[in-house]
Image (cartoon, rainbow, N blue to C red; front, side, top):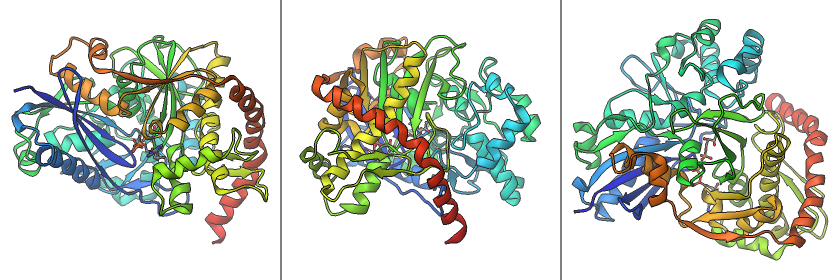
Length: 502
Ligand SMILES: Nc1ncnc2c1ncn2[C@@H]1O[C@H](COP(=O)(O)OP(=O)(O)O)[C@@H](O)[C@H]1O
Ligand SMILES: O=C(CO)[C@@H](O)[C@H](O)COP(=O)(O)O
């Protein structure tokens, strides 16, 4: 009997569970969707119970539909959407819906942190306090929901809650811990200085373990709930972007990762802990001990496209809807889109900016709008490339992952806008693959994640830049770059109107 590991990718739109054998072949995959709760502009929450039931439903389907043998599922690990705040009481019960990475309600708390800690904050955490991160969310609950705050005993990140429900053990790993901006990165411990200055009990922070460490076995109660056996080992796992970097083989500096999930990410492997992007890019602990990565995040990448499809083409399949864009031209017949529809994180840390279509003409058709959305998202990634270039980095290959990499048209647009070759994976599930690789190394199938890469990662088609398209996109990108500065005040005024006058 061959044995399998499960890689659980707890995304924002869905949880995807992949079963892999020792050769790195994907034997079966199942997923379950869940909703975002958006009670107002800037708010984004999810119910942690939905993550647990979605994950369990996908596992049950692997057992019942895909006929995986129970005893053959030997190890499990996770890739989890980052930064989300899950607050637990003294009985480890969830106190309120999780506040997610794309929730931007915490501008006042970020200012407070900057005022109290100044430059020392970046020195400790390697990041600026931005709305999406966990620490400002803790402060928001403390200031706005004192009754809930009084009951809070522990916080967890999203994947940690699902793992807690499987194993009964509270913990997080270093890659998710840096994303809280409460970790003293150099010391590898929760920062006493930050906790003391902000009056956050250090005891709220969960125990830290490494991504490949064993968190525990499946408990008898979760075994009864899911059908798994108590022999299955559960390993800690990593932040989705760390897991995505592992699952796409970003283990040196001449490749970058381009991920189009709900968010968009351009990510680079960093070997030097002293690298400093002054908080414009995020700097995070990797799932590989003592290694790091930097990244720039577009808050609404795949989300911009999904929003457009749901709003204007709900009856069409996603694949048909995207194929429509082929009827437009490079540059969408002169129509530009900026994807700031929930605010932005990089390169513009601005919770009040909103998206725009610029240059709408009476001749434009729906396919031009779809193409403009696809292109605008990639222009926002191009902004991150510009920061890396300004810092002296160069790369010849971009590895593309996430739901957006299912579209050949979008992969070609990436190659043409980045002016670099773009490589797809045989399976678009980079973070899920990374999670499975963590479980495989945890199980001792390989000595290191690097060694596992050789066996598990299989690249697919390579998309090469078309020189004519590259020239056109360079021209349009120069126009795109001007849109933020010229629209930010107008969109902030409109947001203010929505928040206070409607
Ligand atoms: N067939 C497709 N072609 C291109 N993009 C797609 C397709 N299906 C879904 N997407 C995009 O993928 C995004 C979801 O990607 P995924 O990596 O699953 O996200 P998450 O990890 O945040 O749940 C959607 O927002 C959508 O824009
Ligand atoms: O906020 C970030 C990274 O800092 C996001 O990348 C989240 O980690 C969510 O990822 P997806 O659901 O889009 O994969």
